[in-house]
Length: 86
Image 1 (cartoon, rainbow, N blue to C red):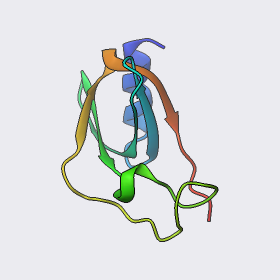
Image 2 (image 1 turned 180 degrees about the vertical axis):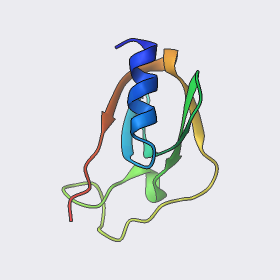
Image 3 (image 1 turned 120 degrees about the vertical axis):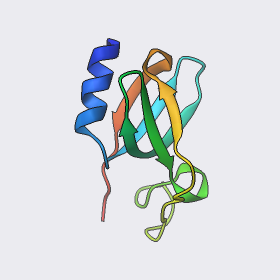
């Protein structure tokens, strides 16, 4: 997927949970906080990136509203929107 496609998908997904895999193989999960022309910023989930539901931690998993992590679109290998299951 090209950089522009990641940009547009992220702009449409502000406030939604995502999983980002980088070109180095690291995985990051959180809520899209903000998008700039060259970066997407996500706020990580509390407890190491776990979501409530099917193997992703407890239903009471909250958010760690600390600093948002920024990722350059060129470093993103895959971007997956996650669904909350209640």
